[in-house]
Image (cartoon, rainbow, N blue to C red; front, top):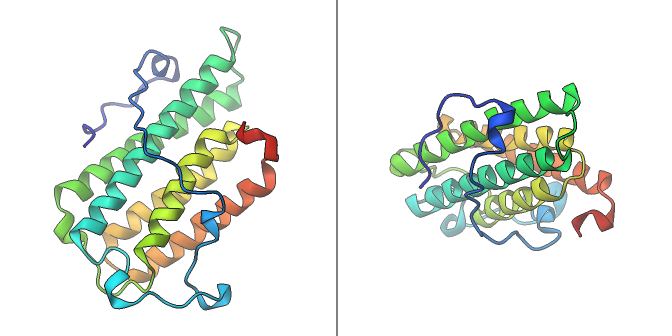
Length: 198
């Protein structure tokens, strides 16, 4: 479990931080296509597989948020190194500062889920746990390969919405957040050339 975030670091300080990356494997390609809504032609989840319906499921989501925070930190470091000592454009600095803030919030919310998993168990979510896992793992992989760092912000925003929705304890905000992540992930696929993954 990651330690709680400290005060907001400056972008320049991020380059000196250790990577601390986890080696959680990314989801298989195309995993963002997994969905249970009727318009996508997939049956609703059965009671035994509903997302966040057990403490184990909640901890699994916390693991995913921690991994995403690791990947986001790696991505920010890569962006800093890519400028190789040259001046970083102001709009890129702004994006990296926002993403550093987002990284800390993701870690804080993951720590909250770890600390009190029983309080976040939800019985009425008509979405399979496998979809939560697939979307979050795929997002972690996309954060690493997105070419323009500014494009990361929308995807991370969807993940923050999911983390916040879980705290509400209500299924509807969680479903909306999952759809938001799915839409942003699909948009990233459309914007990223096939060779970018290399």
